[in-house]
Image (cartoon, rainbow, N blue to C red; front, side, top):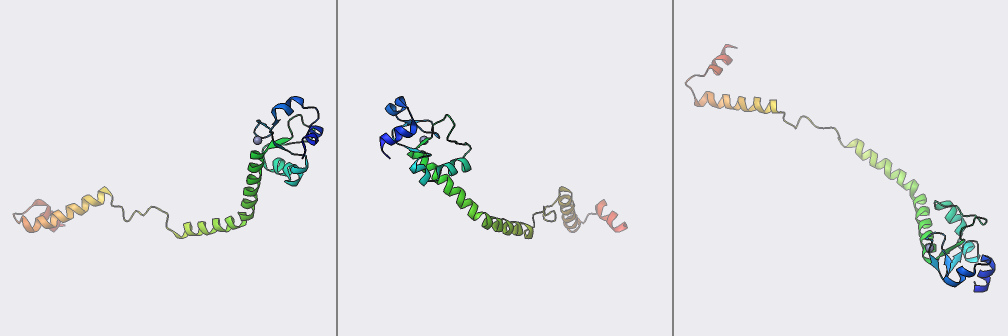
Length: 151
Ligand SMILES: [Zn+2]
């Protein structure tokens, strides 16, 4: 697009023409911009991509700039492509989620108490082993052994 065509579309923006055009998205001045409602903007479906996929709404009658810079154009397109990709893969992701849930269901996720020895059980085990060993080693007769015999 020629500079004179820009001037015609933008109206009287003498000051902007000197320093550049404001980008609607990054709010910075740029010498080279793409007019959202211009030929380039229509080619890239910028109105649809900005209004549909960005948290702003552009209308031809709002008082804000209708131009975006090259960097923002690239970002808008990348953002749009990413969202399209995500939308395409959504079905695949649902299947993936289901298979992950199946894996979680088949895997025992509950705490396995049987393997964890409680302090009570440890004490009992140690006392049992000590009593059995002590009964053989210390044959001098302990009161504990006598009690077990009487029971
Ligand atoms: Zn920009």
